[in-house]
Image (cartoon, rainbow, N blue to C red; front, side, top):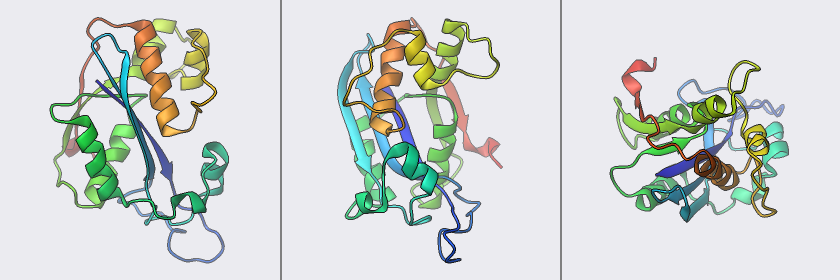
Length: 199
């Protein structure tokens, strides 16, 4: 399985009224980092993928995004654009893939970015496993909604690695895979994302 996580940038009015200050309804969340880990049948991490992506829809990094990720505008100088980065990601994943994600939002955002950049035309179908849903049920989270990634890591007593950070796509993908290994579901439910259901 490929466990995937994404970091996004979004519109923010920096006072210039220029490009990036208005929300583009075709792609509200622009992917600026793809992080992924490849796992074997026992959910052991066998390979990793990490790439920063130059933002073009919202060229300046939103202050909140900068705060939680630690990324600033300078980090993306020389970074590839989304089509180039996605091509590298597909080389990493290979064919016949099932994506493991923390919730549904990354799958929807991936679809939006793919279609915005005309990489593929809808309808787009993706297979994914919602690891957040599995963890929420396994832990017995009863506060309503779904458990957050860091809270799940703590609840399952998973060690925090100094070089793996939350709100970093590779770090979050790594911890999501660690959660999957800890729970070790025999046959996780494979869900189908079909973009024709997205308006």
